[in-house]
Image (cartoon, rainbow, N blue to C red; front, side):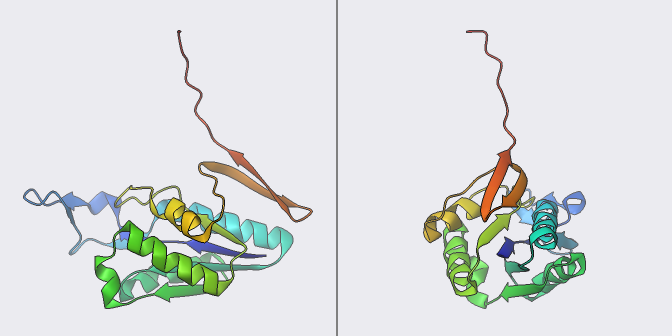
Length: 166
């Protein structure tokens, strides 16, 4: 089974500041790191590979320095890393990002795609569902554990039960 993890390099949350005029993140001079939620996805992919065989590929779309995040995934144990980088991606919104990633995933021939819960820099939570929609694949969010048996995935989700007084 080929598991592809979509990962992103993000500003270190401890150093993030907002520009008071534009209300946008100030990225210049801020140290970058692998998104902390993506670390969990990569670790889960490695666990699945170690238990069942296959390959773990990490993939990111970003500027040249995003290679540092991919290097971390390789150090964690990923088998390969794919870096999608082009100047035209600099202005991509979530729709453009999801379109590009979906095309790359089709070319890669992924059997399963894992993503972190969100990114700490934008928290839109949009790219993974948009990628799934473009691929025509089902998706599961808030996954707590994945198990593989007899070529079938079993996914346990975290959910919040609301108490109601009605």
